[in-house]
Length: 119
Image 1: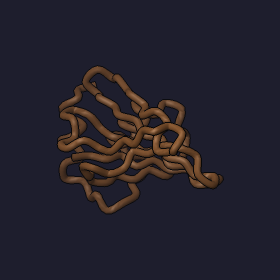
Image 2 (image 1 turned 90 degrees about the horizontal axis):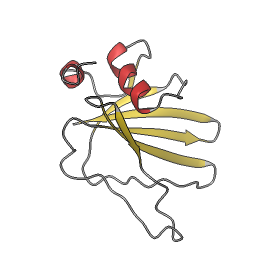
Image 3 (image 1 turned 30 degrees about the horizontal axis):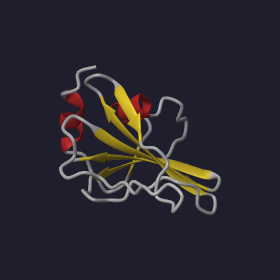
Image 4 (image 1 turned 135 degrees about the vertical axis):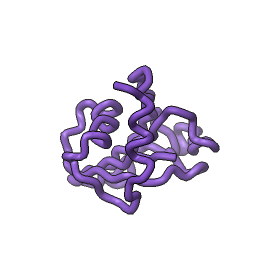
């Protein structure tokens, strides 16, 4: 997969919310970062430097954060953080690392969705 095609395809995308799971570009990103995700709720949003990347269970909710680069098909999952026991607190860097996507896998009780953040 040509890494340069993905940002160009998404450049003019409507970033107001949910995208169809039949959209091949977005789903290439989701499948690359989260190969086991089989849900149907996928959103695209603008990357916000400094946003919290906290990842821990809280009352049945949790966010998993994954950085993915299509050029080498490498992914890095942000470790659990944000609790007093972890003594870690991660936030999104400024600027977004070039050639990478940030993917949030949000679990809300029995519901689950994915957000692909792009610069």
